[in-house]
Figure 1 (tube, helix red, strand yellow):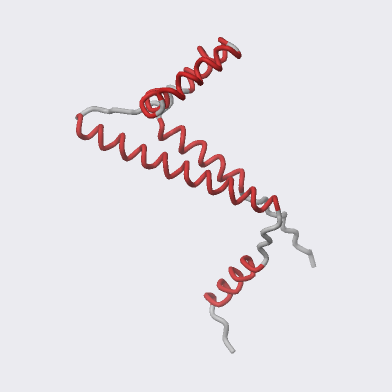
Figure 2 (tube, rainbow, N blue to C red):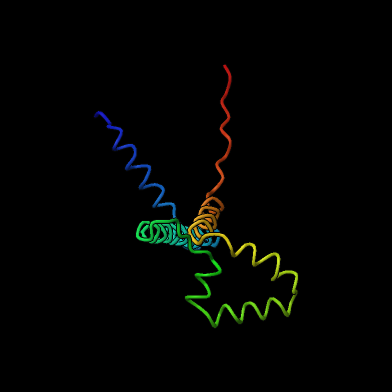
Length: 132
């Protein structure tokens, strides 16, 4: 009986699914982290498409910053965030968060999403080879 490479791959995939234990909290946390990372990565890509479309229509480069996007979509939340952070520390709001919020939405979402996906990967055990 000759085994094709596709059979070996499908049996490995089946074994990986069969080993999944939903009661394992670490596995569930990794799954949730990866899902949030993928959603943020998709949101960053959508923001990049929107900014690109807007730039083509305007004839110049137009980029939406996190500050502008947040104040447009959630004005109440933006104002409450600003007041609560300023009450905590004025230094934290003015030079730190205002500088971070100047980043484009696509870069911010894509960067955080990629970081979450990288964090959610399980580390592989090192391979040791026996010498003859």
